[in-house]
Image 1 (cartoon, rainbow, N blue to C red):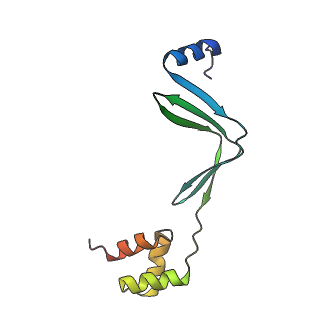
Image 2 (image 1 turned 180 degrees about the horizontal axis):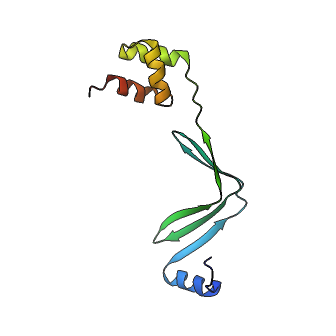
Length: 113
């Protein structure tokens, strides 16, 4: 809760506003996946806040970041090279830049700027 505020008063005010807070217990780990890597909160505290029928989640903890290490397989390189008529080296570099996303890589290599 908020420092300096009586928890009973806070609950009363929240109830009047139609807010409900509920802590999700026993959370050991939360992972937020992004295209550039993952944010890992371990341990983590998660609170669900419901207001006007919408639930939002508040995440507390100290994250560590792990970069995405995408493995580019040769068949993906061959497919992109064939579909875009570029050399395999160019296809591999583009796949690495697009984190292994074949569709995004093909669009990137075939889009005329």
